[in-house]
Image 1 (cartoon, rainbow, N blue to C red):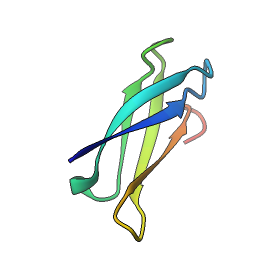
Image 2: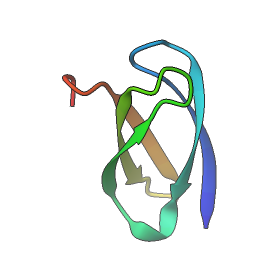
Image 3: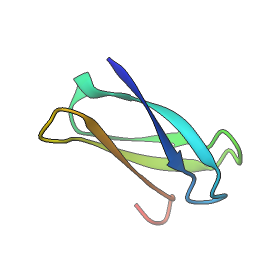
Image 4: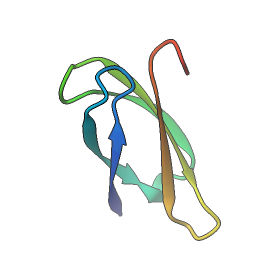
Length: 62
C-alpha cells in the first residue's frame, strides 16, 4: 500500500510529493528532489497506528 506524503526539500525548500510503502516497515532510502535534483535522505517509520511517517534530511544532515 503506497501512501502519498508531502515533504519540504532540505535544499531548495520546495514541497515534494513522495510515495511511502507502509508494508516495508521502517526504512531509509534516497530520492532525488523533483525540483532541484539533489539527493534527499528519507527515513520512514511506522507509528503505533501503523501509519507511515517520514523525515527528510540533506546529504550532510543524515
